[in-house]
Figure 1 (cartoon, rainbow, N blue to C red):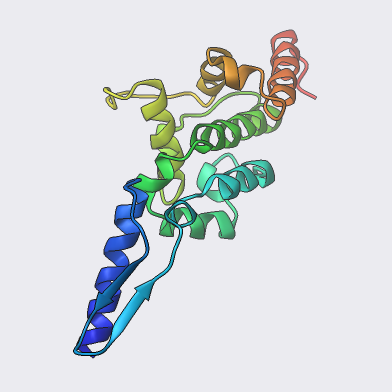
Figure 2: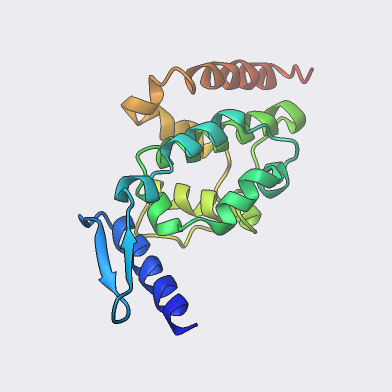
Length: 188
């Protein structure tokens, strides 16, 4: 029993270390007189969520004003169980946050003709997305009283790689069209 616990602890420590991007090679550990446990893994495979983030961002479909209620059960489970420190280091994390919040804002405009306060939506797994956005716009100050969901458009417009992103671009254009209709008083 003690060997199993030691194996679990060592496995956990190796996963944490690999997530922090330290180079670790395959290890052989001697647990007893003649017993060896061999760890064969790829550190990049343990902490590479980019393809999942991209998949979840593309498949996200808002169903409610509330971001938490719009998150499907698969994404909710993923966000509640993932190593968030590791997740935030992913290359696609910024795209993931922006794509989801942009789609959510578009939904706000289509259903209700206005943006909504993201800070009031920080609950459950949606807090990871909203806090990620807060860190992207102002990493030193979390003392905002209100953050309109429309702020995602300004953020994307000021990031060259996001502004010209072929996935985000159609949503930006559609949001611009909806905003023009709302200004004209056309709420259809």
